[in-house]
Every structure is written in C-alpha cells, then in structure tokens.
Image (cartoon, rainbow, N blue to C red; front, side, top):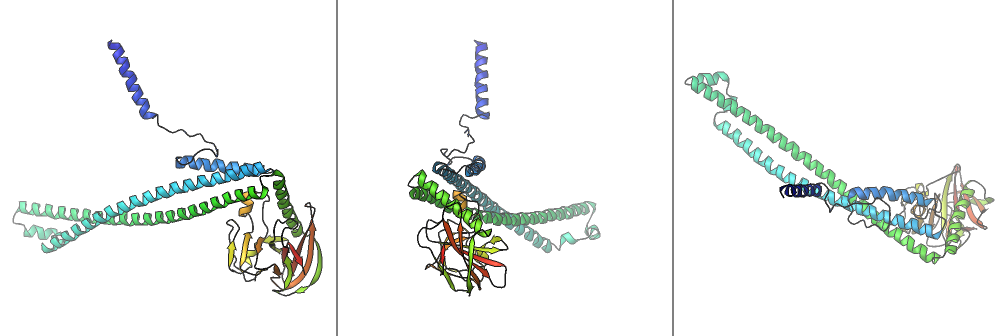
Length: 402
C-alpha cells in the first residue's frame, strides 16, 4: 500500500507540473488565411501572422482573376485582410493607451518624489545657513573651534556626513528630474504614436467600407452573371490597351486647328461608349512619350470624391478641362480601383466629370481629332492638344471633337 501511495503522489505532482507548464486553456492557433476564422480573440502576434499570410494570398489571387467567382474570392480575401488590419490596429491602440496611462502614473509618482526631494534639499540648505553655513567651514576652523580632540572628531564627522548626505540628496534630485523629463518625452512620443494609429484605423475603416461597397456594386452590375462579368473585364482591359496604344502613337490623328486655353474642343459622350460603361472624361498628360500625374498641373477646385479613396492632390495652375465642381472618379497610378479589381495594372490619367459635357483645352496649342481601334472591336474617340512652346501634350478620351 505504501508503494502505491507514493506512486499516486508522483502522478499528482507530475499532473500539476504539466498543468503549470502546459495549461489546458492554452489557445492553439492554426496559421492559415481562412476567411471563416474569427479574429476577435487573436493575439497581436497571430494577427501579424495573418496579415502577412493574407497579403500573400491576395497577391497570389490577383494573377488568377479571370472569372466572377475568382474576383469575388479576391474581394472577400481583401475584405478579410482589412478586417484583420483593423483588429490589429485596435489592439495596438489599446496597448498604447495602457502604456500612456502607465507613464502618467509614473510621472505622477516622479512629480511627487521630486517635490519631496526638492523641499528636503531646500530645508537642509536653510538649516545649514542658520547654522552659519556649517558645510562651508574649513578643516582648520573646525580644529581651532573644537574644545578637545573628541569634540574635533565629532564635529569633523558631522561635517563630512552632512556634506555626503547633501551631495546624495542633490544627485537624487537631479536623477528624479531627468527621469521626470524622460517620462514626459516618452509620453509625448506615445501620444503621437496613438494619434497616428487612430488615423490609420480611420483610413482602414474607410477602406473596408469601400471594399464592401465595391463587392456589392459588382454583384449588382453583373447580376451575378459570368457573361456580364466577362464583358466588363474585357471592356476594362480593352480600354487600358487602347490608352496604352494612344500614348504610344498608334492612334489615327487628324490636325484640326490651333486652339486657345479654355476653348471648347469637344463634348463628353453621354452614356456608354467604346471601352466605357458610362459618361466620363479620361484626362491624360503626356511629356516625351510618358504620362505624368495631371494633378501636378491642375489647380485646386471644389470636388466630390467618388474614387474610393484615391489621393486628391491638385497643385498646379491649369484650369480644368471640364467645368467644376469636379466629380472625381479615379486618380492616377495604382489607384483604389486597380487595387480592388486588378483588371489592369496602372491608371495613366484621371477619370472625371463636370457640371456639363463640355470639354475645354487646358492650354494654347494645336488640336487633333483622334481615334484608336484595338482588340475591343470598336473605335475609341479622343482629342489631343499639343501645347504651344512646350513638349507637353494633353489627351481627352471618350469625347466627340468639335
């Protein structure tokens, strides 16, 4: 019985040890970008891992977007990735706020300690002054003022001790002040970090809303039909190829006349047209065969943003080719539309609307009527103005030229 009892004790101790080292409540996390996984209770480390994995999955899916189902899978993964980023940012905000609260507590304690140390130091200085500045008394003054050897050593020891204590107190005051200033500086850094995180969170929430809206709009526009989706995809790719062809000089162009800045040169085609599913102006600036951001030349004006979050940064002096206020549909470069749908890699102009269909030249120059027929099976009409006394040309797509 005794042996059995010891064996039982051994297993109890072993079980307790295993429970401490490997608690049953320990959460295991399967690392996989699965949109069915709940992210609400994941740690920051798990969230960071998921962000990396889902970012790679989005990149992989981009090259496979050729059907409506693959497009929806890509959009769902993008939405899930943004949700993970939001959760991660919220977790970082909570952590940073706790750090700020802790620093505030430290600052309060340091402030109290600094006040006590400062008052103590001042009190000692006053006391020393009342005692005829005993700390400044020389060795010989102590020697000659002492009644005997015992008195001399007592006073000398007191003098040394007082000097050491005051020196230690002064060092403590200086260290407390340095710590106090360091904590205040750290708090300001954390507050800046918190403000940046809040800005990031707001942007991520806007991205999520736009991504969810894009998926909803796509399902509405396609009516969940693969045929309609393929038509939209072909249209977008054809427009991109046409614009690239026009930039490369493959369009058919006819010289019309010289025009002045602000002169009406055409009108936006109403409704769907070649490579366009709705009325809009695609405006491009070309220098030496390469496109540049039109915002570098257009002046700031009132606008409404329907781009999904593209940067609105006009900083030039040109008047706009359409009458403001401007409806901003898509920006220049790797736009929100490019990142969301991945139907083409780069947007080399801006898509805009104005208060009328009138299109105006943004500078003095020579007007050309252009047309490009590509793989889309239709002719894309455009206007081109070669600017006077410069190597700049501007292109106005989806317009009838007057």
